[in-house]
Image (cartoon, rainbow, N blue to C red; front, side, top):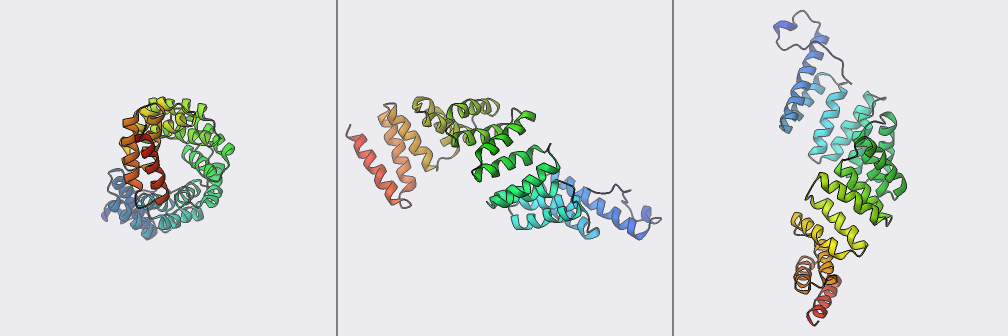
Length: 282
């Protein structure tokens, strides 16, 4: 994406170069400093150096791309879109601009646009697993589950043990009520990423959908340790306790759920209060 040029670190060594070449070299120095700061986690410094590189050379596609990743990382999505689209203008045959744009549109929940951009990215670079996975996510949100599953499987052919890809595939399978398959995939993912709350929560939901309440309890407990304020997890855990005859634990979990929704969901709170009363009377 960028031309390799002799780097000019000191003014004396630039004396023999033309003004244009010296300016281009200065842009490279700023860009390399940007990458160095980014690697060190100094994101503000990295962004400043990227902007300096662009100021010195307005066609520096790599600097625009890195700037876009920094803006995306700081949740400045509209700015990131502009940077990634500039990459597309400068490098029409590169997948990077489309990939960056698609990832931002996905975060903005502009799903149809995200699908279009990510299709372009994958067409230009069929080996980019991040774009393939993001396209799967966008297609899943679009309701195109078969195609989404195909994308996840394609990515997993090259990276079969990636927990995030496995999780996303399992979510899509669950949406098709293929909970048995989802359970096996999530168990594989958890073997690679033990104790992960998101994976555990999805595994618990798959067990619950299959009415395997006893199996659902342990992963629900792990998921809740990762997010004590998820009212839905507390309700599902309470229901699983109730279905396995653990009355006291069920009541405690229902009460935690009620605390979290009180004042936010009047009908839901009324329903849970009735459930608690009926369970207390047993």
